[in-house]
Length: 168
Length: 257
Image (cartoon, rainbow over all chains, first blue to last red; front, top):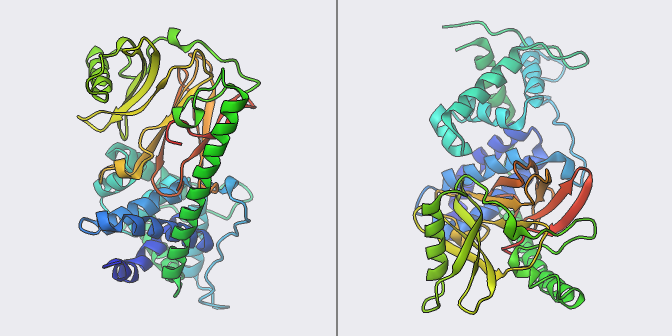
């Protein structure tokens, strides 16, 4: 289809990464990505002249939020921690690992807000528009998510990340 | 910027690099589309057969269930004479909207006498637009039930069927047909209308891929509304109507199947 392949090649990777960051599972992210891109393909004649990336992102993000693990037939593995450093697991890696685990404990909508704000660099208004909710809801979800990340985890969960400190 | 926010950016950036798009991703997308179309064909075919079977088995209870959005009473539930239900929903008591909905209903049958004795069972403004369920008498004296919906300002009749004498619940999707979605609308809105005060709940799941779903919505005043994104649940969503732990109904959402 005219322009679709180019769109998928250029923007697909970024959309796939966003899905992964929200759901935390590579296989699931790929499934959701394929479904969203298939959806986009069906609607391509209608949306290609407008804002196809916004359309695709909205489909993808919302489907990722809506996905319910308990209905899924197959087992979903917990995302593995990237083993990029091997034995040389630096403090920075450990800190990010703790953050990643803390993110996994957040409700998916809160996590989506964080991904959209800190990975996609969307404004609060843009985030609200994409999620189809009010600006106040985004602010609230954002605030709760950060508070949860700063809060010590309950016993049995990985230790919490450091409390936030103002850097300017 | 706090340390937590900095760390969030670093974590997302690092994790993102661990995911790459599969080389045959495009082929997989094609496979998804083909699978969806095949499932949809099967679903529609099965729906027609099921409707035929139900019509033969319980013709006095069910009138064209596949097209009505009116679900046949399951054994455990008690069908109610819904015409006595009070108008519900945020627009249920709005005479102007009721008039607009009735006018849209009349306009859908040009040349036919206007409907009379119209009652609003439910009307509200939802994420995808406005909707109403009406019962009224047509020019032949028969009672009919209609679902009228649309984005502001237009309203269209989505369903217009003979009104059953009683029912357990009404369920419909205001925007299942993809062509009815505007660029600004990315959601389906599933609506469940149950007897007032029933306390029943609704769950939904994707028609083509049951791994999507199920939002559970507690009813308020017998109404449950669930907005779902227009992505995962390809095909027509299915619902379950639940009273405590008992499933009263499980099947396709009514009016669009």
